[in-house]
Image (cartoon, rainbow, N blue to C red; front, side):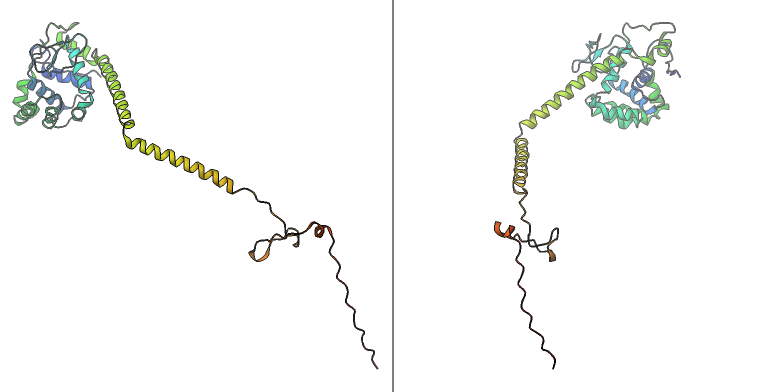
Length: 290
């Protein structure tokens, strides 16, 4: 289903509230997230910049962008179209340093609380909590304070919407897939991947230079050596011994009483000479009865 975007009283430009809808759409945030919509409108108001297609004053350099001359303390950019400005803003918010801000926006958290997250983040819009608190005090989304700022228009420069229907037609036809978002995001993703790889390499080198690392490696190597020596000595001492049978015992019998069989030394002559038969003793003659 096509998203229906809010349109200002005069179809002559992109209002702060239109910008909020476009940015939410680019970030995949539900159009029912009213707290986030109010936050973005307040954010535009707090920045108060005339940077072209950049009411939230992001500094991400992209193809076709130029530094806005009105700010000397930060490299705020002018963008050639609202699409490019939305793409740059969305990509900046998806950087790891704004994870808590984006999470609050996606979960439609209270806009005053989220404003404090923005103020203390690297974005640094320090007066945003004051603007957000003023809007809330005047009735919030339906109050006079919000109504006074949501219809303000961003600076479009020389950009003109393509196709029929002016701004309204452009919103309905172009905003569903804002050109440049995937390109900028892929570039940011590649930079993040390189940075992560460099961080991992740096940590690895730090480990190598840590003396504790080599101490642990030495312990593991010495332990392996001692285990190998132990296995070797165990093999040497557990060889098979010659067993001398007990010749005096019966074949296959086990020693009784749990005692070990004692090997009997026998000479070669004794081993081959049959046992002598014991001599019979003379039997005394029985007396003849009288």
